[in-house]
Amino acid sequence: MKKKWLTLITAALLTAVIFFPTGGSEARAATTQLTYSVFFPPTHGQAKAGEAWAREIEKRTHGQVKINVLAGGTLTPADQCFDGALKGISDIGMSCFAYTRGRFPIMEVLDLPMGYPNGRVATRVANEFFKKFMPKELEGVKLLYIHAHGPGLLHTKQPVTTLEQLKGMKIRSTGLSAKVAEALGAVPVAMPQPQTYESLQKGVVEGTFAPMETLQGWKQGEVIKSTTDCSDIGYTTAMFVVMNLKKWNTLSADVRKVMEEVSAQWIDIHGNEWDQSDKKGREYTLGLGNKIVPLSAEENTRWKKAVRPIIDDYIKEVSAKGLPAEKAVKEVENLIRQYGKAYK
Figure 1 (cartoon, rainbow, N blue to C red):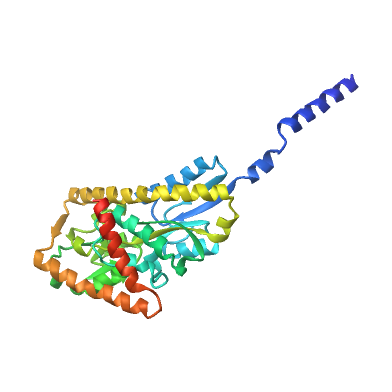
Figure 2 (figure 1 turned 90 degrees about the horizontal axis):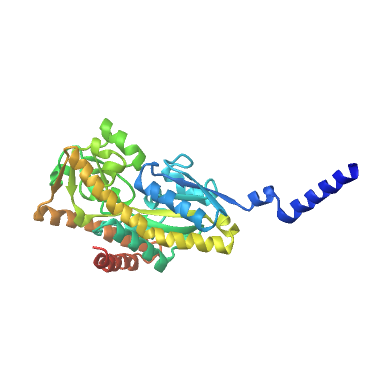
């Protein structure tokens, strides 16, 4: 009887070896776990687009990659997101180039007040520009893709339709939009989006330069009363999705290919999301009883003239560093015209 049981146990062990040769622990080790730091709150459309990107990569890699999306700056704050990915605090990070002003001199050209018509155009321009210039300032990370919002407009607690009304007002701004505020006679106050609502609410600032989407996406429509439609000087804020380079290099060629393919597809997804968010932001602020006020033709000309030195100064300052600033400006202008026709 004992011999019979030993025979049965031996047969069972052989079956296990044949049908389960690798074992559960080794199968689990084959899964790559990644952290993704996103500065947008989890309810924001861009955070949701980032979440969908992560899930699509998991799907296409058949679970080889698992991405833990940490939105709302819970892993790294907005202005530390790039360094977080660079140093490996997070594996992937999404934030704005503008939050570390002066660190990305070539990429800052994207944020100049060149009159971006919408988010899809701004996003396409940003990605095509990067491909053509491949600036050294981003060599330390793997850039997966860029997205950028529609025209940044002026949102204030009191209506503003002239330069005189804007003079001396404290306006929240970031990166080169701070220079826009200053050129128009305002006092720029640098701060990331997560701090803006409370600052407007408490009167720390009297307005903000931002796309329409912030009025709903960040609930800022609750603490402003008026939007000035100054779209002819509309700037954008380019936002990176970057990955720690060492971690990227540990991935298999197949996984890297999937991530690049999904990233290329998500360019237009983010661009479209920006435009839909701008539309919702417009509807939201009007629904709260806020106003959208246009500039007169005369004021529009004055505002455009006032911000032109920003572009000229950028060319001068960045050229002095030995970088092709004038070429960069012309390329962005050409790309806006090109994609402006394609994505009206």
